[in-house]
Structure formats: C-alpha cells, structure tokens
Length: 201
Image (cartoon, rainbow, N blue to C red; front, side, top):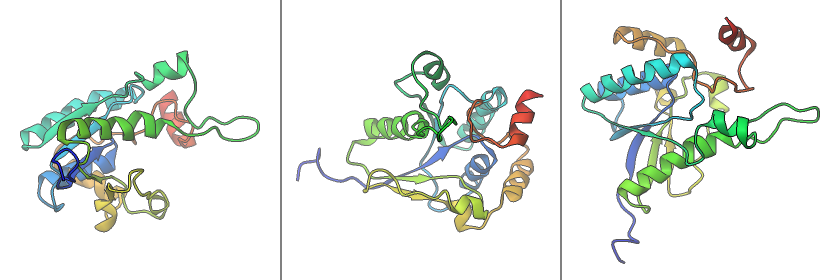
C-alpha cells in the first residue's frame, strides 16, 4: 500500500468552541489531567461570535501557546457566517411559520473547515480524534453525536470525568483567566431568553 493511501496514526485534537467548557477542557489538557493530551488546539472562527468572545479568544490562545500547545485558527471558505447570512442565504436554524429551518452552519463553518485544514497538514488519510467540550449535564448527553466520517472519532472528556458547567467555571477562575460567556453566534436562534436579554443589555 502506498504512503499516500496508507492510514496514518490518529491525530488527537481539541476542538475549541470558546465557551466555559472549552476553556476548561483546554486547561485540563495543558495541566495533564486529560490523557492522551490533545496534540493541537483548533478554533473555528465563524465570523459571527459575540464581541466578548472575540475579545477573549486571543487571551486563551496566548495562554495555550505559553503552555506549549499548538493553536490553529480556521475559517470557512464561504467567509464570515454573518456576511453569508446577510448577503446570500440563511443556513442557520431560523424559525418560520411552518417549521425550523435546516441547520447547516455547524458543519460548514466549523466541522468541515477543521477537517480540511488538519487533513491538509497531516494527510487526508489521517484519522482525527476530536476532543469536544460538553460539560456533564443531562441536556449535554443528548447532544453527543458520532463524527460525519467513519474513520474519525469524537471524545467527550468532560462527560467522561463528570465535570459540570459550574466546575468548568471554577477551573477557569483557578487558572486566573476570564470566564467567557456561553459560546454561540450572536444571532443564533437556539439561544435562551436569558442569553437574548444579555445580548440586548
């Protein structure tokens, strides 16, 4: 079998979403509490995050690099999601009179750009193991999904360790880093009433 078509050793990476669970997962990796430790941290910049999130991400990146972790930021070839929604079409789960629109944003602005960049760097036959950040709550359990590509694998270290959202916040505070708001695009229809009120404040 040629090197081009041979399957490589899996690459374990942390998919950084910029919310409290993601920051806690980053810290626990850097401190060696998650094993195996993620080889790299990948942040998919959708171009539609909250201003607060955009201001905090460089601090987390600098901390990760200082701790010896490689950080990669990727973006969709379709450009910022906010511009796409305004100028082309609406690939987000908007509510209509009849039903909720199909959700395509996570796949096109996060999952695929991450996969494309990692396969560009490490070969398209490299299996990817994603460390994903959901804290341990019944609601989070219902969001667990298998990866789109069968040879890849998703891991949920915070769920494995039964780490709650409150524990994530305490972990961030213990590191002396700012606690971010919940991560979501600023116009995501799936946000709670409380998050909408915070955005309007």
